Image 1 (tube, rainbow, N blue to C red):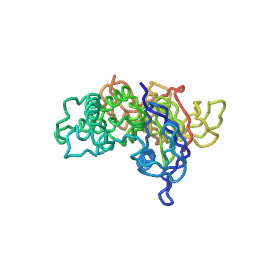
Image 2: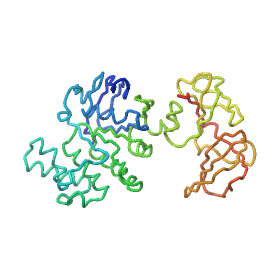
Image 3: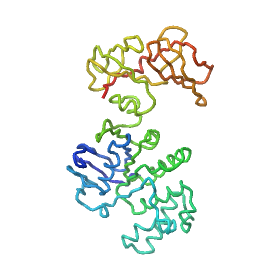
Image 4: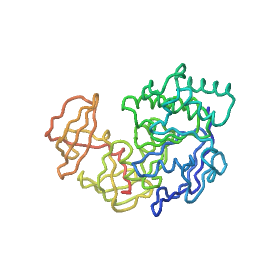
Length: 353
């Protein structure tokens, strides 16, 4: 059930002095959509989130929630729920007290508060935990309390700022699945901030990859992985080999380029905006193979065991490097010389920036 509302950035921008934290951004998020803002530190993700929350005012442009211009509306009147990285729970309150806090501020009747708190604790699988103290909970349970507190006010938009950052890796994987399940149940329009590509790919309907205050590309996880717009997106989403290339010709979405590292001229899918001149050839590790003959010669620098897979760090004869990932069938020793081939129908040429 999609119970969220539309969210629209209308050329919204934010400066801190002369620094452009967020460049003019126009973006629409549909009711019930789960959008992740993904990018390195300093890319503008949290600043964009805080513009929606009302914790920062845009330098220019507008923020609209459900068609209502909230640019100058105080944070407390936007009906937006926020989950922080450090959870920001009140240690002196019980679980129920933390969850009920926003409803008490709104002066809701006690009976309604109790019912809403009980309902949302059941939703996050914490029924019966209401009287526990915060310090009696695990990190994962505290994260659920923070989420329950944001959901209980029935927000138009739910905002989450790296909410799994304080959890260990295994717990984060578990909670990622739980967050996706909860989203499918409550259906709130959600913006999620992370620098972790795995979280973005697991959770999102769409992902917006950010760099230096701008959105470089937005799309589904599959679109970003298989059709990155440029070398930055290609390098940020999934594992990649990005080789220097010189584009010789571009015609109807297909390009021909000389790739010195492979000592070859290749034909590959061309990203939008690609032109003749310097570019990068994207070769995913799973699209490389070892061959008895043909291809390019390489030496195995490292052999990394990954369970059912093995990753090979290969040094090419001209000094270039490739990562190759393959099923664990037979071992390849460090220092061994091998022949490497590639799936030409999986190659992609992208602009350098």
